[in-house]
Amino acid sequence: MTRSLVTFAAVLLVAVAGCGGSSNESSKNAGSNTTGATPTPTETPSATATAKSGGGGGGETVQLAAPADGSLKFDKTTLDAKAGNVTIDLDNPSSTPHAVAIEGNGVDQSSQTVTASKTSVTADLKPGTYTFYCPVPGHRQAGMEGTLTVK
Image (tube, rainbow, N blue to C red; front, side):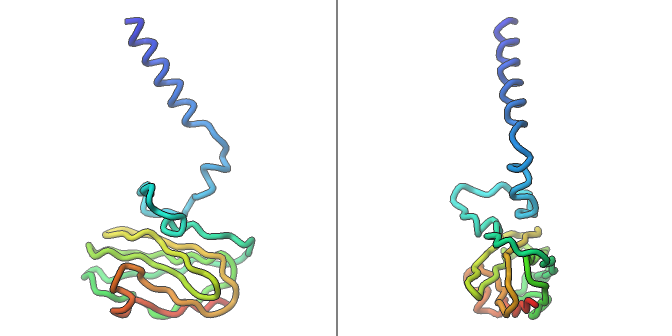
């Protein structure tokens, strides 16, 4: 009985210690992974949609979707956003894997690849023209890309 009580106390102590930490750590990546999945150790920060923040204010979130039938296209080929931290939310209701990436003007950010789920990518964007696309091999070449205009 004493041994199980000591084991229980040790487990409780580890659990309580794991709940500690600064609120800064817990909020640092908030919103960068909307799928709720834990990134695998082989993923890079850009694969988990973590943006390099250049301190830009403003920005906004824009919506994008892939078709439920798994077609290799987005529902939009043009997006507009304000300069600053811009997030593209992608809704992929199909079982075909999709992701969303932003490139141009020194930016190259990608979201996680998901099936029947949502994901997003965020980047600090200056005014200009960028390309958004699906980075899954072959999808961009099949037409899953568009133009993001940042003002």
